[in-house]
Amino acid sequence: MPKETISLLDIREDGIYVDGTLGRGGHSRMILERCPKGKLYCFDLDPEAIEESRENLKDFDNVVFIHDNFKNMKDYVGHVDGILLDLGVSSPQFDEGERGFSYRTDAPLDMRMDPDNPLDAKTIVNTYSEGELIRILREYGEERFAAPIVRNILKKREEKPIETTGELVEIIKEALPAKQLSKKGHPAKQTFQALRIAVNHELDSLETFLDSFDDILNVDGRVVIITFHSLEDRLVKQKFHSLTHVYDDKRIAKRPEDVEKPAYEALSRKALIAGDEEIAENRRARSAKVRGVRKLWQRS
Image (tube, rainbow, N blue to C red):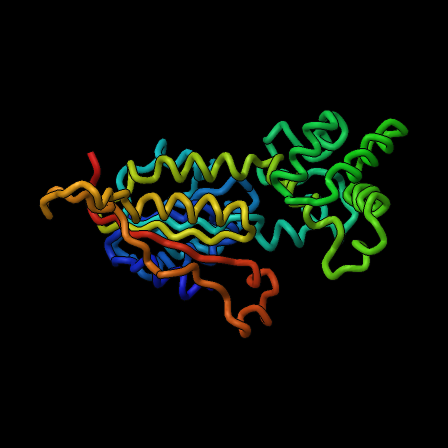
């Protein structure tokens, strides 16, 4: 939903913006085209994405590329007028089978967005305890069959290390009941999601950002976030709700000027979702949700 997302940012031609998840620069280009007198800071953990986007955006001289996690943007930028996050794994990362993100391609168990990250999926699968693996699959993948999957992982890794995505997919399939295997959707999807989130500390990064973006966002500035699974969306929804609502005890009489007002307003009544036409063009869009808020005043 690139058009809807960019529209929510309400970009000014001289504004300062942040694309916290650069990818291959699609959103960044749309922002830069709308702020010729402003500046755009682009963050990504993947150096390949940054190098490819440098080439894709070479026509613009008001863009700064930063190889770091978006949770650290306070360390690089001053006050800004808008921030965009497009969470999850970019299409090229899924499509490049050797990165180990996809359960449809046999590749080394990696799943690192940042190749300098010392933790990869192979380490988690082969060294983490039974309890920790079950927690990861249940918490990050919402996997109902976490326990039998983990038991089979532990059994197989005693025989030899689990090296590839293909091996892990077979281990997952062996652990699931036939009825589950016959259902629509890939049986390894939730386990792979859980491992990817754990490897890249995705939810921790999102929580850090949500707790800190107010420090750098100007009044009338906007934050727009695209999520792709319920765990991310729940964090964003809860944080945005806390910013756009205040608790008012109706039992206590107050003068109008003493009634606390929220510091933010929601940019849409509900999360925006992709239409049928966009889903037909891009199947991954079917799980996307877009939420945004606008800052009304600066809290002390």
